[in-house]
Image (tube, rainbow, N blue to C red; front, top):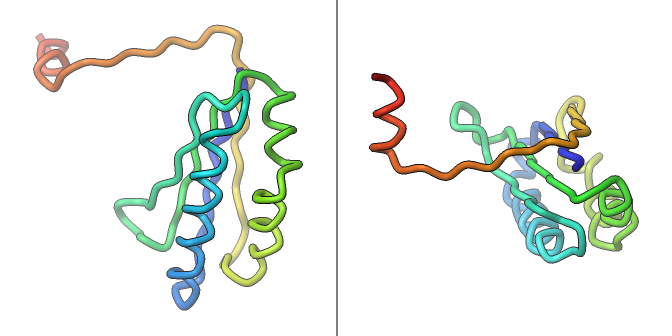
Length: 111
């Protein structure tokens, strides 16, 4: 399992265009073989900060993603839409757990 968490600060003046590009990449990427999760979200404290959460079955799936035309088009747009640097945290994991619970279940964990 490979997990990437990437943080990008958008140029405010290019936010609308950037969000369109991000949404197109997200939609395509979610359907790629080997992609478990591919999410893009804005930071609740700063709407010009976008965070990607990417989870792949393995390194090969992640590499295939970076070879797609959609990914290439997005990366080519980065100098126009990004302010500052891009940060990526990459996690290789063999043991991954998934949990779903209700708000009530979360409340019970406080007892």
